[in-house]
Image (tube, rainbow over all chains, first blue to last red):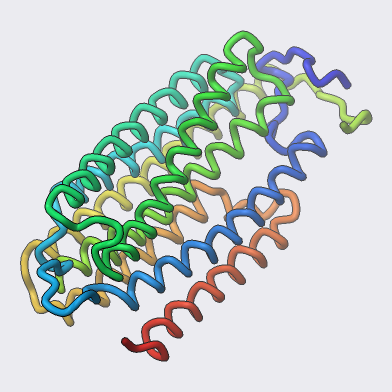
Length: 208
Length: 113
């Protein structure tokens, strides 16, 4: 079998992403990575919970007054919708519609980029009002947790953009189908982590 | 690379059927997504409404848990029992979740400042 073999919608395998041994290996490998990433995030989450609102005596920053729900809500919606658009991309992959895959992946990148812009705006705002990384144990824990997630978003954006550009002329085949599929799995995982961040950091933060 | 893989060409009828099944599957995904959006809205609205924090805290945590399981099983296809080595996947991801849980418990109950 030639890895660059051309397909038609009629003979495109049902599960193209795991039709090759390479695809199967990537599938299991990525999931094991995601499991280890879960543990990484658990450690920064737990650190945040332990150090929330802790700092030098007389610190005027508290989670209760710091976070703004409308901003967190907008970020949540952007990331949730980007998760759905990558599901659409995988739907088009099943039907061997490469244009659909590329378009929806591009929309995913755009939404993710919007999320990143809002996050940068938020961090910038905090630093401006004096809540910098070294301000307190609380600020360090907050920036480490949300920043680690932000770094994952950046990596995801570079990853998916590289896929879109590199495969623009290649078309869909068994070489790149697993690549698109794994990138979309990773992107969903970023969304899973964000669900916990908006709940534990922002919602619980506002509750005090 | 698997050399023995052959790709059968589906008949017209089979092809139409598969497309229909894919569309059905996608519709289900969109339904799941609508539920996720709804749960998110409820979580934010409850927090903004200003009920007693001790009442809302467990509720928003529960909503987050439901959303995460939805993501894992529908968007990330963990419900697909025919996926390769799905047992390994489930073992690792739920072990990861268990370790994560012990972190939470340890850092919020044993450690104090």
